Length: 208
Image 1: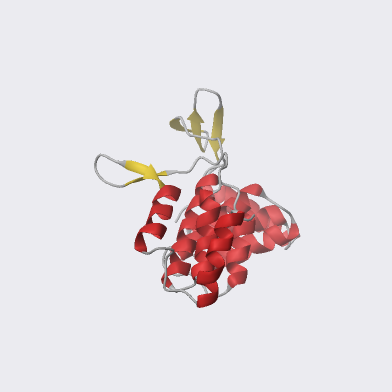
Image 2 (image 1 turned 90 degrees about the horizontal axis):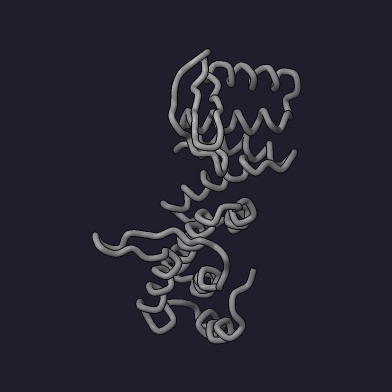
């Protein structure tokens, strides 16, 4: 897994020069510093101040690039506990969402944490789709339905497209909803309390 570039920054033509990788796009010219320089900066900053939030966030991204996900999560969480940082939130959310692709944790606090970190429309759509499908698979009908309702709520979110076939693509939130209603009348199995609660939720709409 790799961290994203800052939002809105797309590399243009690339060239190496003066010890840096230089990018020229239509609107700007900027340079990426060499990795050893960044590592030295982080090391020096943390020697002087072990709780430097910016250095911790940067070390978290470096550890992510090195494949040490657990250490990356620890650094990013610590950084965010000291000071909000949009880039660190984006990277940590993406890293934690990646774990949801293989397993939904029983720890609801982790799910709440991810929801609080998300600032990106694509992340939000993927998070809701993954958690809804996982709740449904575990027979937790009402939590699944709550996630699907959040996806169905009209908003300005630009949902990503998913390829359905060679000719067709569809919004991922619409695929999730069609799957929900296709599998059964209101999707089961679920507890009697969950099944009974769904008609009321349909009447009130999504929350949050």
